Length: 67
Image (cartoon, rainbow, N blue to C red; front, side):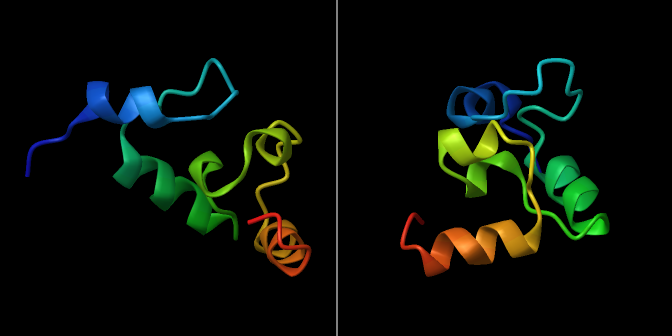
């Protein structure tokens, strides 16, 4: 399967600049799931910038209807 890294990067809202996984969604997802986290693209920009990508943070945002 062909990776669409450049196209994916245009939609990536990850604010962690030295991230080597930007645009490589399969690597990003695998990395975050190992830590019980979701990738940046699952969060609104203001929540993403907190770097709290935990399942619990995501659930709180869903409960607050912010997602």
